[in-house]
Image (cartoon, rainbow, N blue to C red; front, side, top):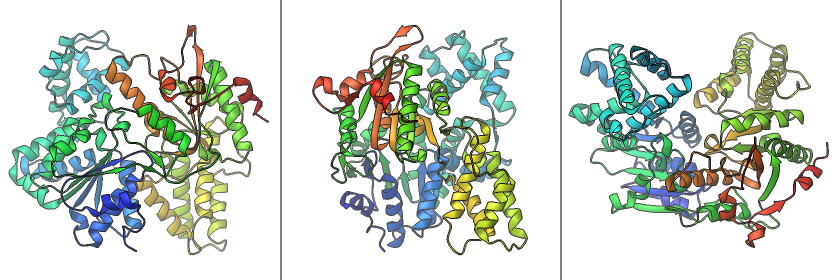
Length: 573
């Protein structure tokens, strides 16, 4: 089957253009990863691309692993699907010994610790939290391609450290790294870019190796990443960028959506394709998302792929306190699970990590197991590592039990029981992880055995292809980007929480609006928004974004207001 057959008209148009600059403006849920992989597969199938000459650049190792997995399913092997940092580090490690006559510098594993040591030489004693903020500011300076002197001219300072001390601290930090022959994460990009600019033979070698580039999430590139991309590309023109300006949520880390918004102006002959058919969410959810971003730069008008009748409108519920809100959400989640929904189909999203504790407590009180996105990764859990080792060991000795009984026996020996432990603790987390492995075994093909199954688990770990845990997901809005769930609860839609209190000025509020948009567009079937009138001793107003979307009180009918009592009455435990 042709790589283009599974695509809609707009997706096929984007995947068919294999040469020259291409910009795919892909709204939430419009199939951008499908377009990226099928476009590369089409290029390989037609002979326009050699897999080893293609580089697909992503922002996370997980996204790179997903690309490799999808390409493998399409019969394409050998494409370099990497993050910016992984690609740059590979090039540094390859070329540095030839250029310098020694191995490339090592990468520091704890920037905060080295900063603390640099601060000691100045007799400064910043707190660990301040050191983390300093590390973030240094990262922003580097990816923004500013020197220490240029940064100092901005007058930015940290708690207890003035601008001149901050500049000196950065200089001493750099000196310490030089003495130890170390690089930090951002230095990897800077050093690679510097190497390509200063060494024509290195640039020529990279240009010979990679002829075709695809960049995912292009709205999130920083000036440094964009410069490195230009150096990788050289004078060639085969670049495809994919992104959505409405999902730019990393400006604090140096992301600049202007590179996506100005792509067509910088490349006058670029092919630009807009993907606006959403395959994820029902129409009322898309109405809310479109209303939120109406008139914003680069906003796309999302339309549902199919007409749905009697689709639920998003709801908004006001509570008196944050604890009332958490308990109300937990009751609603419990009722939804009792009505037949899988916990894996439900997510609770919030602006800041601090909001998660009260939600976890409320859900645990209802006996609902949770997984926190951004916590320990599945394949890094000790229970999972232990299970894989035990399955590999069991595969060595012949067994008369058969594949599935063999897996069940191994997992039971490690502690898997028929009944789960109480929710809200490490024991339940481990039980859920072992149960997820058993489900993978239950879904395996008839020819599976312990050896091939354990090998498949190792491959999934390498690609960060994590199985679905049958738990309710808790996540910040940032960590939820790129994911989706049938049922989404968005907590904390109050002024001071979303937009967050320190977001002042037009640009900062716009970033918060885009973050709200990301949250809304994670939902497929139902969307529930909530806020509380008080936090501690202070009173709060509903988020301005609720008014921008529109409520029944304003006559637009996009949001449906519910009462707290009605929400709690739906709880049937």
